[in-house]
Length: 310
Image (cartoon, rainbow, N blue to C red; front, side):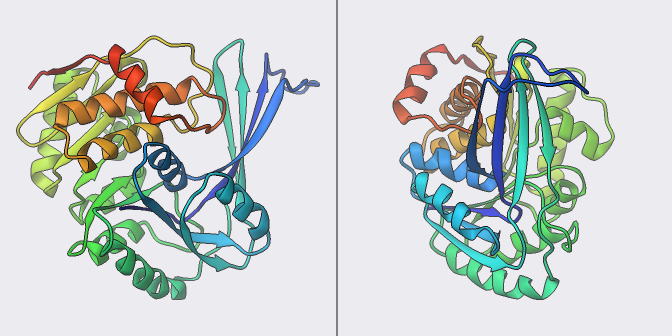
């Protein structure tokens, strides 16, 4: 089983329109609501890839019925701690003519640090039943930048930790030596205030991080330029796949789920990266955070080209 942690989940409301006029009247082509947050997005894709998973974290008590309905719609196994407040709504405005997505993310509820021991107890129990525990996304108000570091340390002897975060959450979390991290190239550059304008620089920097922090796998997504899977001693590259982009929402989460499917299934690193690339590509062909099937991923694999480059 794989456990995903979603401390700051969201209701993702995706609005599609042909063009967006600031200050004017805009007519919506269509819209949809999905349960989201990075940890939940990963679990949704794992579910479709037939990997047993469970989501834990916090949800707001004030709209728990709506959230529970959306979770049930995705057939997700979940174990949340309820807190006073609303689970936030994140609105995605997708301009179809320009292929531009604008995110309007609410801050979410406030978490009292006194709730953390309860979360750690629940998480440790789930970690003992899990091959991997995924920590991803933002954290609620009231928690510190060391939250992921603390939680990864808590489960370090029970399961392998995977971290997908940005800024201080990523930098601090790496101090706990997670098994894998999945930054996109912009997050990696921003977190360490560095310019990585070539594959050579990315690979060199990634290998140095793997060695320094004891990280086994570093999956770097680069949008239209594909992705890199870096270890301390080697690197694999998945080239980009040309498709019609409908929305980039959840693409990174889908890529991570595809990678987890591969390594959880015992596949080689290059084949696992191929599943990651296929899953990430499929995500951008969907509206909002819609899921896809294992059959669709395997069909997309035919278009994925992975090479060992270092």
